[in-house]
Image 1 (cartoon, rainbow, N blue to C red):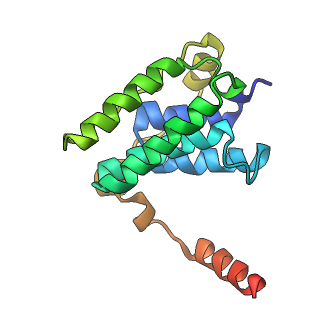
Image 2: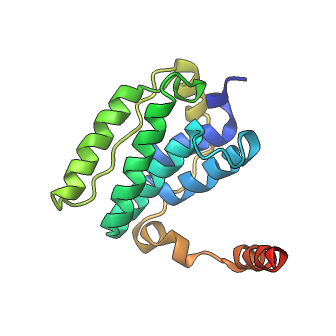
Length: 165
């Protein structure tokens, strides 16, 4: 299977393009990244994760975090332009979107979403087959990381901290 046809990647595109749920984009791609290249910080999936994170920060008004994440995402994508993880995506258009987004942030313009242009018909068909879900809105979308149950995450972090000692 082509890496872009993985169900987690098609979910990512749906969350990014249809729902603008950048927090969920990060979640599904992090899971995929951990399957294929855990700890490889230069893997192409990390570019998509950082771009999603940057968009999430921008919408929340975290300008510093947005710029840092989007620039890192751009750098990671440029390291891997021939990767299978960009086939079927019009990466040059994504880079143009990122340049305009970074410029808009620097100019103090309000948040504006963009779509990841998909050129692969097979990928587009898989995305279209994604189950229909109701997009979140308002605070549920904008502050999603603060509203979720973090008890399991905190438990794992504490266990890691104890194991390091």
